[in-house]
Length: 46
Image (cartoon, rainbow, N blue to C red; front, top):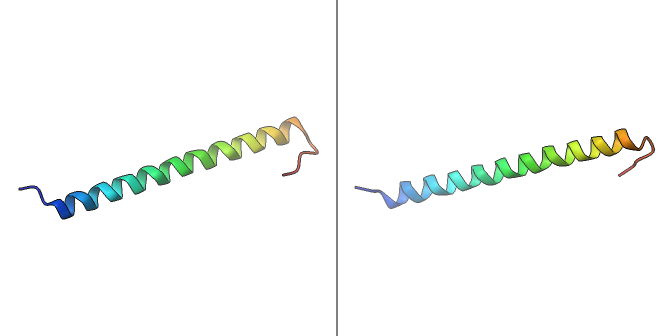
């Protein structure tokens, strides 16, 4: 028998993890982008 409580709980945890992963990826990408800007322009400031 499927337990709706544990099922929805697992789904919520799954989506939270996906959102965190997405944030981590975007954060890493933004760091790469800013470091590229730094290498392109030594006087670059945020």
